[in-house]
Image 1: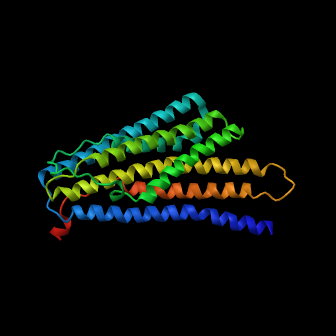
Image 2: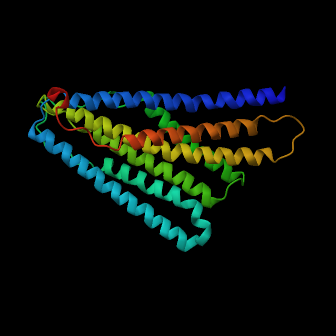
Image 3: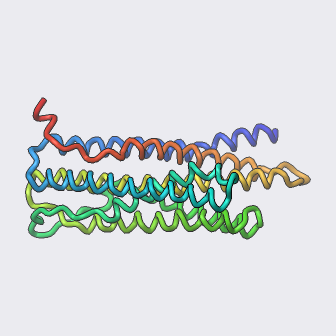
Length: 279
């Protein structure tokens, strides 16, 4: 009976990860619609310049992120020697995701006339409110789990510190990028409106996905470590907590990898050109 409960609990804990991946799949459809609307209009010179500037800006910062990741790998080799080999992929991914966040938080405002009276979009017009709050809750969860495991001596400060600091800083950068996207007034020219909406939608989804990856993967690793540590303890009765922790860890890792796949496909800039009209 205990094994059956463990299997059912493990499967049930995989459901949140599946639902989160499904939500990001629906967000991908939303981005496709935003990008397709740009292809249905004849771009103004200001709109064309904005798209080119934003694409160039994103590539530059992603290159900076790649350099940061490589620098982190070199630093880990110097500090840890052979033991650093397991950190190469996480450090490179961290640098690339930092480049994505820094690119979005430093976006230059497009130079086009503002609509009169000023109108600013709501945040729910750019990204699903449920998806945004799910990302925030994951960040809070990884911070809480890291503090709990550190206080329980399951992990040391060298693990708990980055597990708290990295998602927290990424979350702050993402919130700043979202705030800048919301505060920017809507353009006056009708042809620039879909371009502006697409750029805002790109920013909202990129920063949320980056934060999701930086929070879900550490959360999964911490939960797996906690489950393994708890499973090694001897108890007088059947304990479902190790199964719950391991199931939650697998769910978090799977969801983080799924979001990372979406993020990789979203790094392309907003499509420029009226392809639909040309066809």
